[in-house]
Image (cartoon, rainbow, N blue to C red):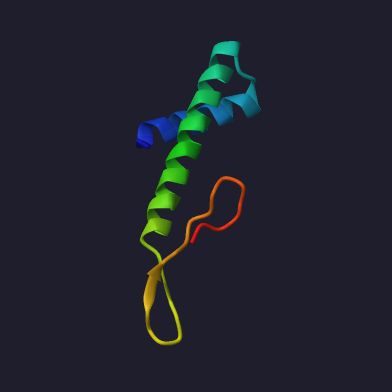
Length: 74
């Protein structure tokens, strides 16, 4: 996510605390927040995809993924 978008989120947060937001600004803030959360999730998934578990014998294997319900896929 670009720094300008993060700065805009912060500006809207400051304005919300100080004087409140219009309906258009609330919609913009909600959309920016969704975009930010998606970017954080994508970054986290990228890190987890490159994470390996090493057993006591020194064997490396990728971190197993979980399906949507929370059970492990092996």
